Length: 142
Image (tube, rainbow, N blue to C red; front, top):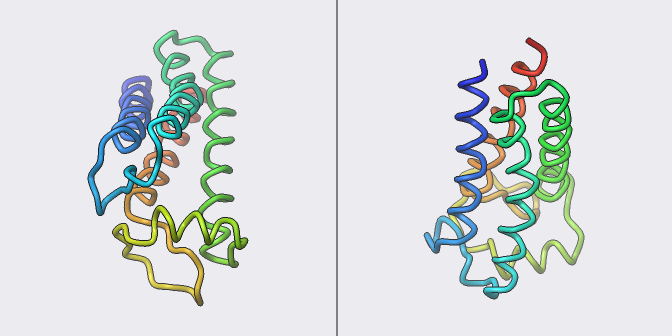
């Protein structure tokens, strides 16, 4: 289970860093961000996603437990920022951000009213986050 948790944590950090720093339009739309905004997002998420990777590498039970908390926090943030707006409606502020940055990226989910639709880039990220959390949690519980 350690190997699977390690691979998933590497994939999690790597995927986010690549999609934050490299333009794959229309898959992502980093051109809508300033260099400073991209750097801030990459740095903050490197810490929150990198800590679980470091915890698995260091291989201590206590750090892995804390890593599970980091990953749960990340999942909550992803759900609150993307899925509540899609399922239940978004604030005007989120709708404006979505329209400016994500509206013209690739989506595959059906529209719900006029709610912002999670794009493919973020659906993949969220799937990776869920699998990473489960793998790390199972490793922690072993």
